[in-house]
View 1 (cartoon, rainbow, N blue to C red):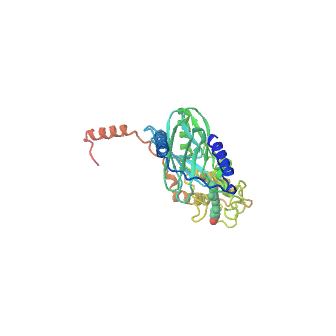
View 2 (view 1 turned 180 degrees about the vertical axis):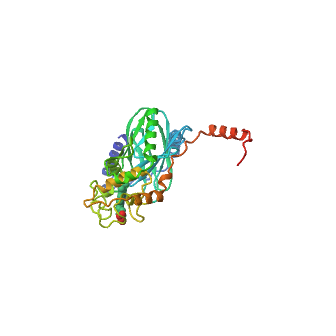
View 3 (view 1 turned 45 degrees about the vertical axis):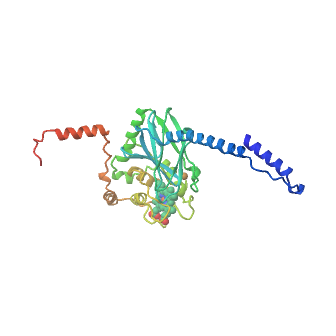
Length: 341
Ligand SMILES: [Cu+2]
């Protein structure tokens, strides 16, 4: 305010006072050595000092503590997804334990656009650049639910590119991981493709909210009512089975979700687990006004074959490096009497 008012007032006064119509000749001013030295040296010292103060804060932001847990975040038009490496799960919300340093690794697919990951309550923000990995870190000291925004204008639904971050006690975090692992790794069954329970869906004990998945990942283009109104004339209208590239069978929609439609805005959704893909497929089908074609046992078996769905395994828990080294040494020292095969 001080600078704004000071500069503006001075400017207006000078403009009026020295306006051209008063037509006065100005006197020539000579240089003033000490004045010039002063206004060069003082600001230089001032901004150099500001640089080092700022650099300290910058260092704090860039140096991630060694004990950090990693969450990989992918920004796409127009949603966030959160990957937990090591346990091999993907989630639509970000959940982190309290009192734990978290390193957030950020990226976007090379075919996407620039986003920016922003948690206002935490005062952290970092650009998300297609094909590159950037990062930020934080340590949450209070439990609660916090908003995540995209703060780089990234197209039509930029303002709806929202997510939630939940900070929970350690114990609750472990329970959450277990449930999410169940969602991803419980083997798919044939009944899943024939059961059109499209609102909430999934194996016993694990409810997948298909509607919320649809609203997060699909509605921006296909419309809340599945009529393709998000990208008029481009995104498939789900209310009719006319003009589909594949069929509206669950297994075919699964393939679309696994592979996308190359050359169009319809991309693949690697972050959705097999159960979530099937749940989304049922949800897509419930928009159909005509009868939906049924999946047969053969359709299902072909899908299982194609994507190796019977062979999906959760990743082995990664051993801390010390523990791994100890095991390795013990193995080497173990008597080798047992006959080698
Ligand atoms: Cu964005």
